[in-house]
Image 1 (cartoon, rainbow, N blue to C red):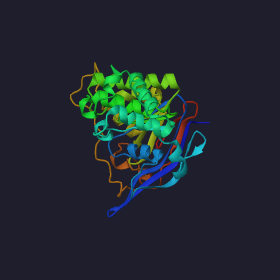
Image 2: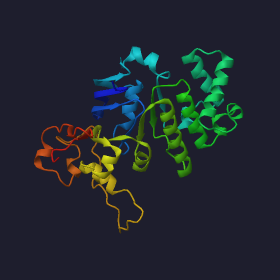
Image 3: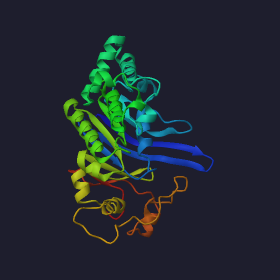
Image 4: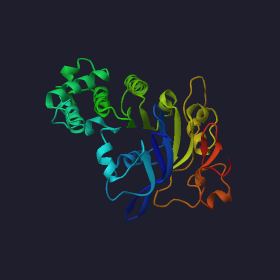
Length: 317
């Protein structure tokens, strides 16, 4: 049984301009000890997918369809209360806004441990210091007494990881964990997540728009466009044999050492408004291979290679 099963997930936001279908019929699985990367440009629905899994979608948004099963538990209001934090954990994009500025980082980690592990104050503090040490923060006892603004961006991100892992969850959701960090710190954070995955058999949902990050740490990748997964495959397969025109466009636009071009290829056009999605394939207006059929009926996600678990949402494949 997969650690996490997401099937036909739909999360919509009613607005004055119409219904925003932020997540529209999204399905995937994550196994224990696996890193699945959810890839796509800003606004494609990656973060809303993560918030849906955590039960943190803010009104007026709501989950209107599909099911999510985590470690045998159907995710809904009653189970989120007991699973979130202890078994399901999330690292948010900006650690500075996620951490409380008026409490030390040690106090904030200790609070998580008191709440979910029912530890006493002294035990929780010791465990918080140990959690900071586990993510390679030097002099963790001193750092635990510092406030978020006293730490660098990389240190704050490590604190967020320590907090998320302090209760030994089975699934970690990392939403753009290396955003705004320099390249050296990015590599350290990604290596830290990879080490924790190996040591704890941790399942990880890694949300990113950086294909270099995907190639470095992920086992499988799912590419999202306009609220839907358009292609999913093992990372080596996806990079070697991308099938969806959008995936091909993304990979072609990545600079490569030794490749000299006057101008990097781009995906022409713009992402449609989620309140005004075109009929048929949402990518059809930008697709160089689109046919009239692509602009008619809904396009299902189909299996190209069952052995590789390679899926694509395209009529031309």
